[in-house]
Image (cartoon, rainbow over all chains, first blue to last red):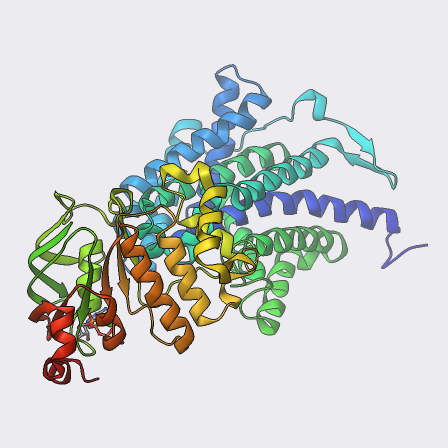
Length: 296
Length: 234
Ligand SMILES: Nc1ncnc2c1ncn2[C@@H]1O[C@H](COP(=O)(O)OP(=O)(O)OP(=O)(O)O)[C@@H](O)[C@H]1O
Ligand SMILES: [Mg+2]
């Protein structure tokens, strides 16, 4: 039996591949959403932070670390760069027109890409998954690359942690309330500027994690952030700006769309995700979960 | 407890407050009245550090507040209930109350605080886990007060708490203010419900066009309808 000329097993496996791809988008979109929801900053440098994540991995490996060190160290390093960027650059533009931080972060992308070219050269670098995660596993319907499963698993664990953080801790309460009404949070004694700083660090740290997770899937190059940024924006638009659940659902949806179209309609694969976005925007201009709340 | 001296405030280039001075002593309820647009809200916001440009002096508990960031006041015992209640959508009643504790050293005693609040505001008790914005306007106002007083502040600034609330609840609210004062909390109350407010207040200031135009005891103002007619007709 075949569907559209493909055996069903292959289609299911390809959908799984899409989920792994989608997991990377989710990590990016969640960070973008947090930053937009709290700071009303459209972070055009998000793709660059993703790319920095991959190179931070290259750096840590060269310094003698292993993949597991990268998994912890990269988000911290990239998040630290994010803290620096918020504290000394983005912060100056609060209260100005929304275009101002957008242009700033857009410009920052070029700075980061050039710096990386100077440091590591223009050509793409390989990045191997650790040996224990290489190979395939039988998932019932066929063999699936273990590393892709790992990416899905790490993303799920990170999202669970993030959800617990936002729903169950007092910092999460501050974030949820601050996204809706920073003034009331301020008069209740919270230094909102510090919350924004930490949210920017958290969002960019997640982008860095996405970058190092994606490195074994696609290699490492200075331009790797550019394409992924477009995908991450499609995800946030489809999911609804500022909605975390929207980012998760839309990330997986876009991942599966990209993977399936690559298999079924290879000549359409670059366009498929934009078609998806157009359809969603026509039916629900605010996105699937737009403005229903940061965590709803 | 709170003394405002020679306060000027601007919105952009509009000079709104001009030489405002007022004083609230510990344990008092002081009322700030005046017609729409007189500058009452602007006065409270200036004290809370929410205006972009102010000049003058605001002493609280012997300390200058002007120049401190807005968030530095709550921890010093100065709480604020803004005019539109500002209940945070998407949060439950309990979470809104918890928000009043996030920056406070007594946040570890949340259970006790919620119990105290449930006693003071019986209407909130059975609604603790309800979405806060599904409550009536009056209940939301009670919640806004509960939230601002969760950390047991020494002084509370209230901006038109009775606005748009059904009369039974208004009476309940003013009784609550009197009890809060008797419990040692100092209140600065902006009100349009002048008769009721003066009935519980100790003293009052009348504002007009960004200035304080009259100051007296609440009793004298209650007995003197001319001032109210001149400055408080809406
Ligand atoms: N955000 C703002 N930008 C510019 N002007 C403002 C702003 N808010 C208030 N004003 C002006 O400042 C003046 C005082 O307003 P304020 O809100 O303090 O009055 P109020 O006494 O609280 O009135 P009400 O009884 O209607 O609440 C008014 O002339 C108002 O138009
Ligand atoms: Mg007002």
